[in-house]
Image 1 (tube, rainbow, N blue to C red):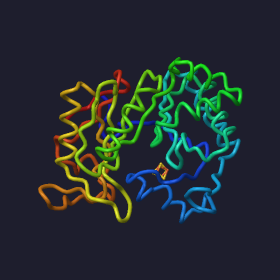
Image 2: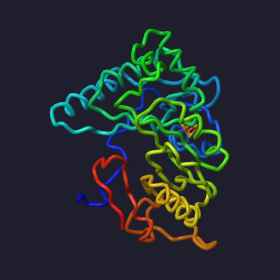
Image 3: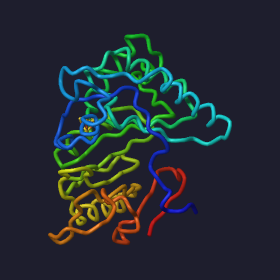
Image 4: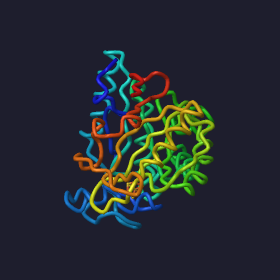
Length: 277
Ligand code: SF4
């Protein structure tokens, strides 16, 4: 069994572009937007009508390098797409998404973890990429789930669970996951058709509190439904019984500081390992 502190839900992050527009309460403290104020990757910042910035060709080539290495070693690294954007952002030029989908199709040894807060746009935007000539997009639209893609939706509150899970289920996929982060209130998702739940409290300055009882309740729901549960972090303001839970790690990401029963990091289909305290 691998060391538990090394277990992570993804192996690499890939941002085909940067920039986005807030869509729901989970975006209110968007970490990427706040980082951008400092790093100025996207000079105009986040928001509707603001220009997104595509990452460089050299950066895109990295994914092909990862794929080649994976082909040689026989491993299947997981690539999270992405941390500074939403792949179903309707404001990027359609050509960018077409290029991204083609890249996914041309890197079959990688497992692409495609998370969105806009699952309702999948049909329209993947259709747009198909219209642009992407054979990969056309096959997906036709109902063929790409074997190297996990699709996920963010579900930060109960309303988003009710709205987005049915939309996620409409996307052809071999693996579907929920990112329940930032967990803003108790969430009771319908877990039928879901293969993984990732949970986390909010990080960064001004983070909203996350009650440990909400996390426990979600973990128990996953257990009852037989769905792997991956505890990512407690967030910057974990609470227990109405009081702050002191943690030294600035976003509650140190497993050793968590209540023992929260040290649960499971992944679907025996990917890597299952570690339950
Ligand atoms: S969807 Fe993600 S990247 Fe876009 S504003 Fe919301 S939190 Fe930020």
